[in-house]
Length: 159
Image (spheres, rainbow, N blue to C red):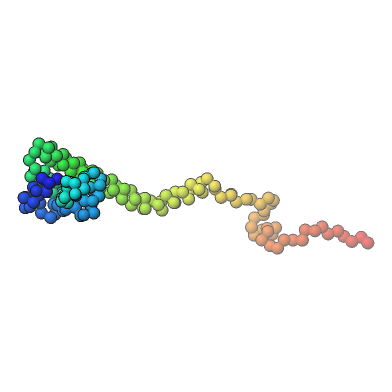
């Protein structure tokens, strides 16, 4: 960590603020507790480390010149390539989801119309019922369009 901080300070032109930033005291405290770094008073890291953006990480790999640094620079570049591919794939998936949502919104009315038609086919309305009995042609003397005649039988009075 100390060597990396030295290299960043010595090569400040390669690390503009857009490429790096130093961890805040709170972030450093969390990092120290997660990585079991010894406390300040016992020979542990005294300076807050730098964190790098994608470009800063690649630049950091170029200033370190050990065998391990070279391995890590290749690893970093490959990791960022994979990350970009994953992000691009996610964007494509999100674009396709948005397209499906748009299609669904336009098809909702069509689907509702189909569902209504299916319900009508499943439960057709009752057919009109024919009246039982004789119906004369309309407008004829015996048709029902006139008031009904008195149909009670009339008997002559014999008395």
